[in-house]
Image 1 (cartoon, helix red, strand yellow):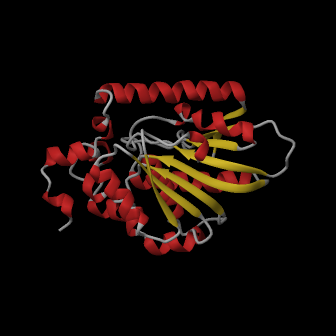
Image 2 (cartoon, one colour; image 1 turned 90 degrees about the vertical axis):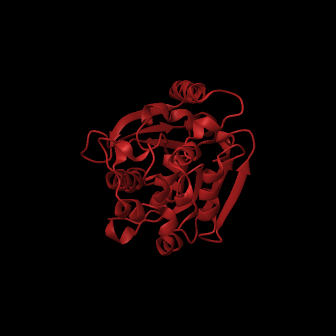
Image 3 (spheres, rainbow, N blue to C red; image 1 turned 90 degrees about the horizontal axis):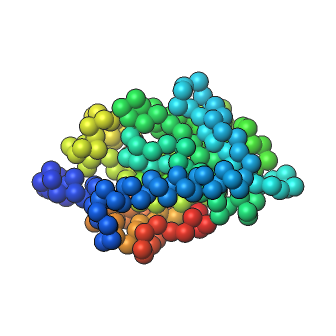
Length: 269
């Protein structure tokens, strides 16, 4: 039995409630402050960069992305795909442009990907959507000098699932140069019996096939030339730190970072 199966439900839920681990503010204030910072950052990004908003990458209503484009004469530009968090049920691409603020000045295109959060979207659908979004982005932006992924929390999980993709099932195999995964959940089994799974309604079978830490062969296959940073915050819960530590063991190409005082500077993605 895994160690988490011995935890009482309320302790397991506390471990998987990131907002309850702040040393500076209440859980409600953490969420409010986080959303406020994301919204303000996105508004600032939209004032700094040229934007292409609500670009479809599929036929579904939620299958759209926002592109933040720098002013540059270069034909080949690096591109960062940002996948938002929110426990697969909260937040959206409309609050995810903040990544562009430090990057567009450096000539980097930033794309914020939208996907159908629960309860509308299932875990299988969300994973399929982010994978298809990457394919679409590569097809739309042919002049990419380097493709990079960045995800936070649930977005880190979805980015890791992109790294675990068997691209032979798709029309193109994106060459991903790097990935920056922050405070992710890479094994979904522990959350099956918590409040997190209430809107997701995952079965054990669904959780297993969507757990990046269980998909070792594909990860090694698809990311042999991809540098991956797995980052955890200094005050993340022991379970969150354990999740990143165990995913880190998947492959020697992954670098584990423990970042003090919250998340890393956005410019380090």
